[in-house]
Image 1 (tube, rainbow, N blue to C red):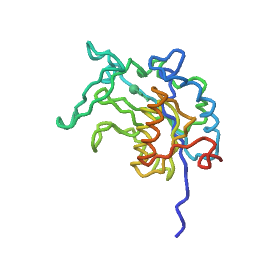
Image 2: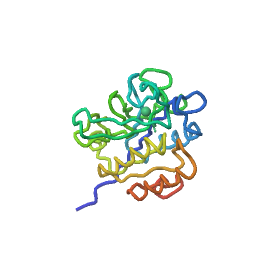
Image 3: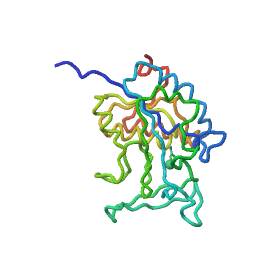
Image 4: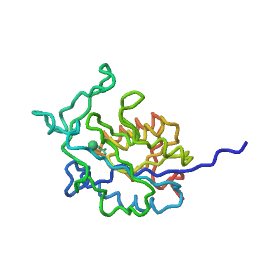
Length: 226
Ligand code: VGL
Ligand code: ZN
């Protein structure tokens, strides 16, 4: 029997004003610098499906420190309980208010060539759960919130998922882990992402991703060259 055909998707994660200098509320250092490369990838015929995600929070979102009196962003965290199962919990970082639905900060960065996108997926829309992944929240299945991305990729018969965008150490990492968990060959393009915490922490994060089965490759590598 013939090998199943390789069909690649490009996932552009959370390229939104709030994650970028100079005006974002949760700026990723040098976040804006990856836009030209992402536009170049979006223009490539190598990818059969091109999807952007948007972090798209209601004002009452549980991840905003401002919604927890006395707590501060970055250093404080909150424990979230599964609304369907009071025994299941996870602890997650609190952030400044960011990517509130319909606000300028939630807009995709203006330089992104959105005409090349096939689809835009909104994530983090349920005020009760934090969801870095573009697929679903971290609670066990059935998830509280599911973006429908798995179904979109399966319907398009995608075999390989390439991930770029922001932030490398949060939503890109989590999205890549879930793409791998869903059975897709998963590649993070190193130059196509930037981390909230660059330096040693980010280098370790990339090694951990590789250990978990996600390929982290240079844009100049064989995996990416068209
Ligand atoms: C993200 C923190 C909070 C991300 C989203 O896109 O990486 N990080 N919400
Ligand atoms: Zn968020």
